[in-house]
Length: 126
Image (tube, rainbow, N blue to C red; front, side, top):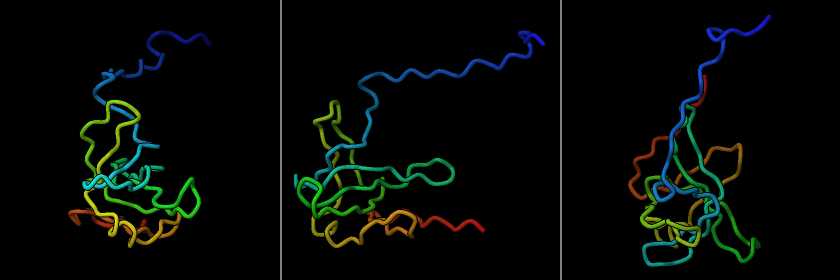
């Protein structure tokens, strides 16, 4: 049976984002307010509604050896100037606070380190 125009799917919506208005964050370097190396963003955590909740940062180590992943509240990060891949993101935590955070392990409850403590834990699906 041929598809008629009334049966065709509606066109997808399109949004144009200017090159200077948004940038990817995966792989971005993260620095403390004191300009200490805090690692790099390796994942973004979203809740069931699709809202960004936190970032997973690969912290410590050298060339991937001795590093560990920690989770920080999305609101603890500042995205001031990230016009190109060399620009870093600032984390509102000290290196000592991040070093003391428990390691993130996939598929286990995560401890989210936050500057403001505003992030509520995800509720288990009943």
